[in-house]
View 1: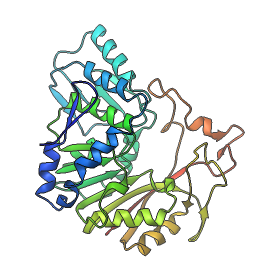
View 2 (view 1 turned 180 degrees about the vertical axis):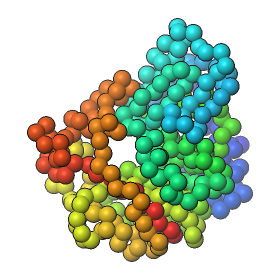
View 3 (view 1 turned 90 degrees about the vertical axis):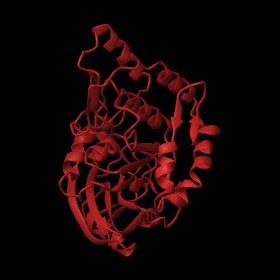
View 4 (view 1 turned 135 degrees about the horizontal axis):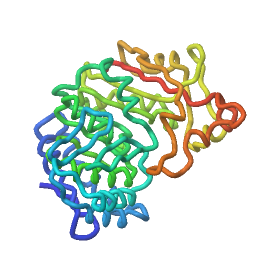
Amino acid sequence: MFQLHLPGSTPVIDYSGLLSVMTESPLAAWSAQLPAQLEHSLGQQRHGDFNRWMETLRSLPNIIADRVELNQDRVGVTSTIPLTTETRQLLMQQLQQLHPWRKGPYEIHGVHIDSEWRSDWKWQRLQGVIGRLQGRRVLDVGCGNGYHCWRMIGAGADLVIGIDPTQLFLAQFLAVRHFLGAHWPVYLLPLGIEQVPQKLHAFDTLFSMGVLYHRRSPVDHLLELHGCLRCGGELILETLVIDGAEGTILVPAGRYAKMRNVWFIPSPKTLVGWLKRCGFRDVRIIDVNTTSTEEQRATEWMRFESLADYLHPADPSRTLEGYPAPKRALFRAIA
Protein backbone atom coordinates (compact mmCIF):
# COMPACT_ATOMS: atom_id res chain seq x y z
CA MET A 1 0.00 0.00 0.00
CA PHE A 2 1.20 3.50 -0.80
CA GLN A 3 -0.58 6.60 0.45
CA LEU A 4 0.90 10.04 -0.10
CA HIS A 5 0.31 12.10 3.06
CA LEU A 6 -0.12 15.78 2.28
CA PRO A 7 0.02 18.68 4.77
CA GLY A 8 -2.50 18.18 7.57
CA SER A 9 -4.39 15.03 8.46
CA THR A 10 -6.26 14.90 5.13
CA PRO A 11 -6.53 14.65 2.22
CA VAL A 12 -4.35 11.66 1.49
CA ILE A 13 -3.71 10.63 -2.11
CA ASP A 14 -4.00 6.87 -2.28
CA TYR A 15 -1.90 5.48 -5.12
CA SER A 16 -2.17 1.89 -3.84
CA GLY A 17 -4.56 0.84 -6.58
CA LEU A 18 -2.29 2.27 -9.26
CA LEU A 19 0.82 0.59 -7.87
CA SER A 20 -1.04 -2.73 -7.64
CA VAL A 21 -2.01 -2.52 -11.31
CA MET A 22 1.47 -1.40 -12.34
CA THR A 23 3.28 -4.27 -10.61
CA GLU A 24 1.21 -6.79 -12.55
CA SER A 25 1.83 -5.16 -15.94
CA PRO A 26 4.60 -3.88 -18.22
CA LEU A 27 4.61 -0.80 -15.95
CA ALA A 28 6.34 -2.81 -13.19
CA ALA A 29 9.72 -1.24 -13.94
CA TRP A 30 8.24 2.19 -13.20
CA SER A 31 6.29 1.13 -10.11
CA ALA A 32 9.50 0.49 -8.15
CA GLN A 33 10.62 4.10 -8.65
CA LEU A 34 7.27 5.83 -8.41
CA PRO A 35 6.80 6.20 -4.61
CA ALA A 36 10.13 8.02 -4.23
CA GLN A 37 9.35 10.22 -7.24
CA LEU A 38 6.01 11.25 -5.78
CA GLU A 39 7.42 11.90 -2.31
CA HIS A 40 10.08 14.14 -3.82
CA SER A 41 7.66 15.96 -6.10
CA LEU A 42 5.33 16.97 -3.29
CA GLY A 43 7.88 17.06 -0.51
CA GLN A 44 10.55 19.65 -1.10
CA GLN A 45 9.15 21.50 -4.10
CA ARG A 46 5.72 22.71 -3.00
CA HIS A 47 4.10 25.75 -4.59
CA GLY A 48 3.60 28.65 -2.19
CA ASP A 49 -0.19 28.18 -2.33
CA PHE A 50 -0.06 24.41 -2.02
CA ASN A 51 -1.18 24.28 1.62
CA ARG A 52 -4.09 26.61 0.86
CA TRP A 53 -5.20 24.36 -2.00
CA MET A 54 -5.02 21.34 0.28
CA GLU A 55 -7.13 23.16 2.86
CA THR A 56 -9.72 23.79 0.14
CA LEU A 57 -9.77 20.07 -0.66
CA ARG A 58 -10.29 19.25 3.01
CA SER A 59 -13.31 21.57 3.14
CA LEU A 60 -15.16 20.10 0.14
CA PRO A 61 -18.54 18.62 1.07
CA ASN A 62 -19.40 14.96 0.60
CA ILE A 63 -22.39 14.87 -1.76
CA ILE A 64 -23.96 11.65 -2.98
CA ALA A 65 -23.45 11.29 -6.72
CA ASP A 66 -26.39 9.77 -8.58
CA ARG A 67 -25.09 10.35 -12.09
CA VAL A 68 -21.52 10.77 -13.38
CA GLU A 69 -21.05 12.18 -16.88
CA LEU A 70 -17.79 11.30 -18.65
CA ASN A 71 -19.09 11.35 -22.22
CA GLN A 72 -20.59 14.83 -22.21
CA ASP A 73 -18.80 18.10 -23.02
CA ARG A 74 -19.06 19.08 -19.37
CA VAL A 75 -17.47 16.28 -17.38
CA GLY A 76 -19.28 16.16 -14.09
CA VAL A 77 -21.71 14.79 -11.61
CA THR A 78 -25.29 15.38 -10.49
CA SER A 79 -27.51 14.30 -7.62
CA THR A 80 -31.17 13.35 -7.74
CA ILE A 81 -31.88 16.04 -5.17
CA PRO A 82 -30.41 19.31 -6.49
CA LEU A 83 -28.33 21.45 -4.16
CA THR A 84 -29.96 24.44 -2.58
CA THR A 85 -28.96 27.80 -4.00
CA GLU A 86 -27.00 28.55 -0.84
CA THR A 87 -25.10 25.24 -0.91
CA ARG A 88 -24.33 25.56 -4.61
CA GLN A 89 -23.02 29.10 -4.06
CA LEU A 90 -20.74 27.85 -1.28
CA LEU A 91 -19.48 25.02 -3.50
CA MET A 92 -18.73 27.51 -6.28
CA GLN A 93 -16.73 29.66 -3.86
CA GLN A 94 -14.73 26.64 -2.72
CA LEU A 95 -13.90 25.57 -6.28
CA GLN A 96 -12.99 29.17 -7.13
CA GLN A 97 -10.23 28.87 -4.52
CA LEU A 98 -8.46 26.68 -7.10
CA HIS A 99 -8.46 29.48 -9.73
CA PRO A 100 -7.33 29.61 -12.51
CA TRP A 101 -9.06 26.69 -14.24
CA ARG A 102 -7.32 26.33 -17.61
CA LYS A 103 -8.90 23.07 -18.86
CA GLY A 104 -12.51 21.95 -18.84
CA PRO A 105 -15.48 22.46 -18.85
CA TYR A 106 -16.83 20.69 -15.77
CA GLU A 107 -20.28 20.59 -14.17
CA ILE A 108 -20.15 19.74 -10.46
CA HIS A 109 -23.60 19.48 -8.87
CA GLY A 110 -24.90 22.45 -10.85
CA VAL A 111 -21.69 24.49 -10.68
CA HIS A 112 -20.45 25.11 -14.22
CA ILE A 113 -16.66 25.47 -14.28
CA ASP A 114 -16.30 27.47 -17.48
CA SER A 115 -12.57 27.01 -18.01
CA GLU A 116 -10.27 29.11 -20.18
CA TRP A 117 -10.01 26.38 -22.83
CA ARG A 118 -12.98 24.64 -24.39
CA SER A 119 -11.09 21.37 -24.13
CA ASP A 120 -14.19 19.55 -25.34
CA TRP A 121 -13.66 21.08 -28.78
CA LYS A 122 -10.24 19.42 -29.03
CA TRP A 123 -11.78 16.11 -27.95
CA GLN A 124 -14.45 16.44 -30.64
CA ARG A 125 -11.72 16.88 -33.27
CA LEU A 126 -9.93 13.67 -32.38
CA GLN A 127 -12.89 11.54 -31.31
CA GLY A 128 -13.76 9.01 -33.98
CA VAL A 129 -10.49 9.64 -35.86
CA ILE A 130 -8.08 7.93 -33.48
CA GLY A 131 -8.03 4.25 -32.55
CA ARG A 132 -10.54 2.87 -30.05
CA LEU A 133 -9.54 3.39 -26.42
CA GLN A 134 -11.61 0.45 -25.18
CA GLY A 135 -9.48 -1.74 -22.92
CA ARG A 136 -6.29 0.23 -23.47
CA ARG A 137 -3.57 1.47 -21.12
CA VAL A 138 -3.17 5.21 -21.74
CA LEU A 139 -0.61 7.88 -20.82
CA ASP A 140 -1.52 11.58 -21.10
CA VAL A 141 1.64 13.73 -21.08
CA GLY A 142 1.09 17.32 -19.92
CA CYS A 143 -2.48 16.47 -18.96
CA GLY A 144 -3.28 19.72 -17.12
CA ASN A 145 -6.02 19.10 -14.57
CA GLY A 146 -7.02 15.85 -16.25
CA TYR A 147 -10.06 16.86 -18.31
CA HIS A 148 -9.06 14.65 -21.24
CA CYS A 149 -8.11 11.82 -18.85
CA TRP A 150 -11.75 11.65 -17.75
CA ARG A 151 -12.88 11.63 -21.39
CA MET A 152 -10.49 8.72 -22.05
CA ILE A 153 -12.00 6.73 -19.17
CA GLY A 154 -15.44 7.55 -20.58
CA ALA A 155 -14.27 6.12 -23.91
CA GLY A 156 -13.52 2.81 -22.23
CA ALA A 157 -9.81 2.92 -21.38
CA ASP A 158 -8.74 0.33 -18.79
CA LEU A 159 -6.22 2.64 -17.12
CA VAL A 160 -5.35 6.31 -17.66
CA ILE A 161 -2.26 7.91 -16.14
CA GLY A 162 -1.89 11.64 -16.59
CA ILE A 163 1.41 13.37 -15.81
CA ASP A 164 1.84 17.09 -15.22
CA PRO A 165 4.23 18.71 -12.72
CA THR A 166 1.96 21.72 -12.05
CA GLN A 167 0.68 21.24 -8.52
CA LEU A 168 -2.42 23.41 -8.99
CA PHE A 169 -3.56 20.99 -11.68
CA LEU A 170 -3.16 18.12 -9.22
CA ALA A 171 -5.36 19.97 -6.71
CA GLN A 172 -8.02 20.61 -9.36
CA PHE A 173 -7.94 16.96 -10.43
CA LEU A 174 -8.35 15.83 -6.83
CA ALA A 175 -11.29 18.21 -6.38
CA VAL A 176 -13.04 16.76 -9.42
CA ARG A 177 -12.19 13.20 -8.35
CA HIS A 178 -13.63 13.93 -4.89
CA PHE A 179 -17.05 14.34 -6.47
CA LEU A 180 -16.84 11.86 -9.37
CA GLY A 181 -15.50 9.08 -7.15
CA ALA A 182 -12.13 7.53 -6.37
CA HIS A 183 -12.97 4.16 -7.93
CA TRP A 184 -12.27 5.23 -11.51
CA PRO A 185 -8.95 3.89 -12.91
CA VAL A 186 -7.58 7.37 -13.61
CA TYR A 187 -4.61 8.93 -11.83
CA LEU A 188 -2.71 12.21 -12.09
CA LEU A 189 0.96 12.10 -11.16
CA PRO A 190 2.70 15.44 -10.47
CA LEU A 191 5.66 14.44 -12.62
CA GLY A 192 7.20 15.28 -15.97
CA ILE A 193 8.04 13.03 -18.89
CA GLU A 194 11.62 12.88 -17.57
CA GLN A 195 10.41 10.75 -14.65
CA VAL A 196 9.00 8.05 -16.93
CA PRO A 197 11.68 5.36 -17.37
CA GLN A 198 13.26 5.39 -20.80
CA LYS A 199 12.19 2.70 -23.26
CA LEU A 200 9.38 1.54 -20.99
CA HIS A 201 7.33 0.35 -23.99
CA ALA A 202 4.26 -0.14 -21.80
CA PHE A 203 1.39 2.05 -23.08
CA ASP A 204 -1.12 1.21 -25.78
CA THR A 205 -2.01 4.85 -26.44
CA LEU A 206 -0.17 8.06 -25.61
CA PHE A 207 -1.44 11.63 -25.81
CA SER A 208 0.92 14.61 -25.91
CA MET A 209 -1.13 17.75 -26.46
CA GLY A 210 0.27 21.25 -26.10
CA VAL A 211 3.72 20.10 -24.97
CA LEU A 212 6.08 19.79 -27.95
CA TYR A 213 6.63 23.52 -28.54
CA HIS A 214 7.70 23.94 -24.89
CA ARG A 215 10.57 21.46 -25.32
CA ARG A 216 14.05 22.75 -26.08
CA SER A 217 14.71 19.58 -28.04
CA PRO A 218 11.51 18.50 -29.80
CA VAL A 219 13.16 15.49 -31.40
CA ASP A 220 14.29 14.20 -28.00
CA HIS A 221 10.70 14.61 -26.78
CA LEU A 222 9.39 12.55 -29.69
CA LEU A 223 11.95 9.85 -28.88
CA GLU A 224 10.78 9.88 -25.24
CA LEU A 225 7.19 9.41 -26.40
CA HIS A 226 8.20 6.57 -28.71
CA GLY A 227 9.94 4.85 -25.80
CA CYS A 228 6.75 4.95 -23.71
CA LEU A 229 4.70 3.08 -26.30
CA ARG A 230 4.60 -0.65 -26.94
CA CYS A 231 5.28 -1.80 -30.47
CA GLY A 232 2.14 -0.92 -32.43
CA GLY A 233 0.99 1.62 -29.83
CA GLU A 234 -0.70 4.82 -30.95
CA LEU A 235 0.56 8.38 -30.46
CA ILE A 236 -1.86 11.31 -30.54
CA LEU A 237 0.14 14.54 -30.76
CA GLU A 238 -1.16 18.10 -30.79
CA THR A 239 1.10 21.12 -31.13
CA LEU A 240 1.47 24.62 -32.55
CA VAL A 241 2.29 24.69 -36.26
CA ILE A 242 2.89 27.28 -38.97
CA ASP A 243 2.10 27.23 -42.65
CA GLY A 244 4.87 26.15 -44.96
CA ALA A 245 6.54 23.35 -46.84
CA GLU A 246 8.60 20.54 -45.34
CA GLY A 247 11.59 22.05 -43.57
CA THR A 248 9.77 25.22 -42.48
CA ILE A 249 10.28 26.00 -38.79
CA LEU A 250 9.58 29.13 -36.74
CA VAL A 251 12.05 29.76 -33.92
CA PRO A 252 10.74 32.80 -32.02
CA ALA A 253 13.42 35.35 -31.17
CA GLY A 254 11.80 35.95 -27.78
CA ARG A 255 8.24 35.45 -26.70
CA TYR A 256 5.50 33.96 -28.84
CA ALA A 257 1.97 35.15 -28.02
CA LYS A 258 3.45 36.37 -24.71
CA MET A 259 4.72 32.88 -23.88
CA ARG A 260 8.37 32.73 -22.84
CA ASN A 261 9.06 29.06 -23.40
CA VAL A 262 8.14 28.45 -27.03
CA TRP A 263 11.15 27.03 -28.84
CA PHE A 264 10.21 25.42 -32.16
CA ILE A 265 7.02 25.70 -34.24
CA PRO A 266 7.24 23.46 -37.32
CA SER A 267 5.03 23.21 -40.36
CA PRO A 268 2.81 20.11 -40.37
CA LYS A 269 4.92 18.44 -43.06
CA THR A 270 8.09 19.16 -41.10
CA LEU A 271 6.66 17.48 -38.02
CA VAL A 272 5.60 14.48 -40.08
CA GLY A 273 9.26 14.13 -41.08
CA TRP A 274 10.41 14.41 -37.47
CA LEU A 275 7.96 11.70 -36.38
CA LYS A 276 9.15 9.33 -39.10
CA ARG A 277 12.80 10.02 -38.24
CA CYS A 278 12.03 9.06 -34.64
CA GLY A 279 10.68 5.68 -35.66
CA PHE A 280 6.96 6.35 -35.99
CA ARG A 281 5.05 4.97 -38.96
CA ASP A 282 1.66 5.51 -40.56
CA VAL A 283 1.91 9.19 -39.62
CA ARG A 284 -1.22 11.19 -40.43
CA ILE A 285 -2.27 14.80 -39.97
CA ILE A 286 -5.83 14.52 -38.66
CA ASP A 287 -6.67 18.19 -38.08
CA VAL A 288 -5.26 21.71 -38.52
CA ASN A 289 -7.15 24.48 -36.79
CA THR A 290 -6.53 28.17 -36.09
CA THR A 291 -7.23 28.77 -32.40
CA SER A 292 -10.15 31.14 -31.93
CA THR A 293 -11.00 33.50 -29.09
CA GLU A 294 -14.12 31.40 -28.56
CA GLU A 295 -12.02 28.30 -27.83
CA GLN A 296 -9.48 30.03 -25.57
CA ARG A 297 -10.70 33.00 -23.55
CA ALA A 298 -10.89 34.61 -20.14
CA THR A 299 -13.86 33.62 -17.96
CA GLU A 300 -14.85 34.01 -14.33
CA TRP A 301 -12.92 30.78 -13.75
CA MET A 302 -9.76 32.12 -15.45
CA ARG A 303 -9.60 35.86 -14.90
CA PHE A 304 -6.12 36.50 -16.25
CA GLU A 305 -5.13 37.43 -19.81
CA SER A 306 -6.03 34.97 -22.55
CA LEU A 307 -5.76 34.62 -26.33
CA ALA A 308 -7.44 37.95 -27.18
CA ASP A 309 -4.69 39.70 -25.22
CA TYR A 310 -1.96 37.86 -27.10
CA LEU A 311 -3.06 38.91 -30.61
CA HIS A 312 -2.15 42.15 -32.35
CA PRO A 313 -5.02 44.63 -31.83
CA ALA A 314 -4.78 45.90 -35.43
CA ASP A 315 -4.31 42.48 -37.02
CA PRO A 316 -5.63 39.42 -35.13
CA SER A 317 -3.98 37.14 -37.69
CA ARG A 318 -0.68 38.02 -35.99
CA THR A 319 0.56 37.76 -32.42
CA LEU A 320 1.63 40.85 -30.49
CA GLU A 321 5.19 40.04 -31.55
CA GLY A 322 4.23 39.91 -35.23
CA TYR A 323 4.29 36.14 -35.69
CA PRO A 324 1.43 34.15 -37.27
CA ALA A 325 -1.44 33.70 -34.80
CA PRO A 326 -1.61 30.33 -33.01
CA LYS A 327 -2.57 27.42 -35.24
CA ARG A 328 -2.65 23.88 -33.89
CA ALA A 329 -2.47 20.52 -35.61
CA LEU A 330 -3.34 17.00 -34.47
CA PHE A 331 -1.24 14.05 -35.61
CA ARG A 332 -1.71 10.30 -35.29
CA ALA A 333 1.24 7.91 -35.56
CA ILE A 334 2.08 4.31 -34.72
CA ALA A 335 5.17 3.23 -32.76
